Image 1 (spheres, rainbow, N blue to C red):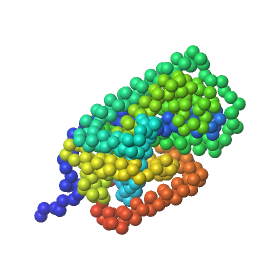
Image 2 (image 1 turned 90 degrees about the vertical axis):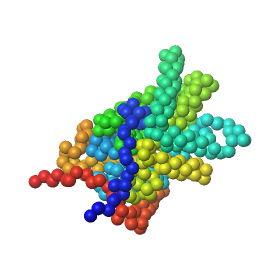
Image 3 (image 1 turned 180 degrees about the vertical axis):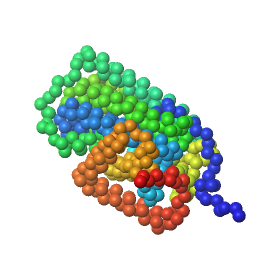
Image 4 (image 1 turned 45 degrees about the vertical axis):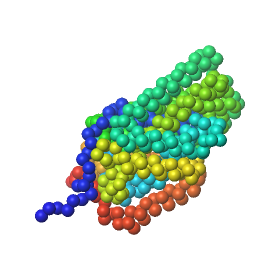
Length: 452
């Protein structure tokens, strides 16, 4: 008797892996270096009143992200498939936990992040928008371009993104070289009397926003199934990319908060442009604006590449429509087009700035839960199943700090907490109300190894 095929049996043949270590590192850099680094430090400097404290907050944020990258490396070594948090939570904890993580990605995580980055791109690319250019058109065109490049073949989108990331790094290096010449010639701006007494609450609040700028360190796990030698290259890309970005952030912030006068940048949303103006006049301001446009372009490209892999994995498991599955060419073309359509719709109808705190809260909770699943794997499959440098202290530090920062953000703005609860509950309702728990097909983890 011929067995009835399951959703997993009817999957298209898997394309050979095409993404090497360099492409994975570029994806991480593109995902991390976005609007946050060019906007956050002005508010942090105003709240903390000290350039040294701002630099300390960015260094701590980098340490948190590096612990997260090392922890995710352990997860992707154990599950070398595309899918990210959906895959990890479905396999290690429970399918409904994974579905909720994917649901968050669909409703807010990637859709909202793509739309916000594209909108910010339009703001910087056209600071004085001409009357003939409708609002949102340039942002929508950027999303459509990213979908076109990534939706055909994986390699085509990866190459274009790699070129853009290299260009971005060259431009940033040029700005840092210029800032270094200015620093040697003129020295740093004198510290003013605006230094405030140290406040732990203010420092933690600044760290919440800074941590958002480090989000994206886990981008390689979304495409692990398309990576060459994924067990080796994906974990390496995670910590290499995160370390490169941390050094880059510290160098940029040194230029932003040490070189200009305190009053020129404190409290400024456009701290990068204000600092560049103070350092190099109009030429400096134009150069940093151009760098931001390139950075946001790569952010949109990386998000359009990563997000649809989550929905494609969910479709493979039978909990999303088969329309979203991976195509024969290796790219989940339909999922990419669907993601782009959702992002463009949000660009057209929404003001996204009020969404940022909610995004940071819900996504940080999902990341913390994913890292915590390492302890579940170690409990049921043995310590050998968890290959993480510094285990258990590295993942434990990440989980505790991330949850602490999320809790503080929820305490300060309760609507974030309420919105996150609504998202989780709605995901649970959809999962059970539509009978997805009965159709959820996945490859289980190896049988648990129980001691004693």
